[in-house]
Length: 176
View (cartoon, rainbow, N blue to C red):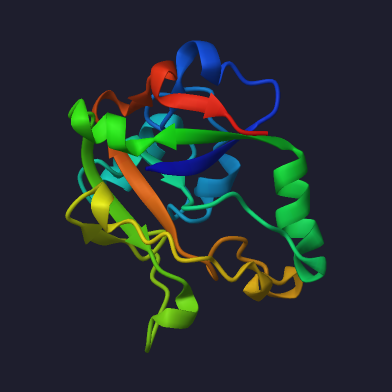
């Protein structure tokens, strides 16, 4: 089974692997500063992530299929896809080699009744038993709309908590 992860172009993932936030001291902090309540250093943001749940800072976001942008999501999805390389991750092999500590699904906010956003955690994440619980049903990318912002809130995705915080190169292939 494969899932898909995006990294800004001109990366070194094929040599060094896919790095989680915790394993990447050069990660862009701007996305997390507001969400973390104003934390401004890599270490502070890692601690905030871990306060959400153990392993959160070693989590790597992935989709069950490559992103498909629509006319309504040109700014948020097309620009994101155009500026990134898509990597396929062999989660079956990772699970077999005992590299996955936990896996979570973040459902579409459209599927969560009574949703209220909270400052203390940055997304809804529900634990799965294992990679066999990944839902490979087609994703309705048409619900992503530039006017609504929140790039991935309207589609399900997965957070793979990786032992050591790095998916080694042998488990990934460049898909784009």
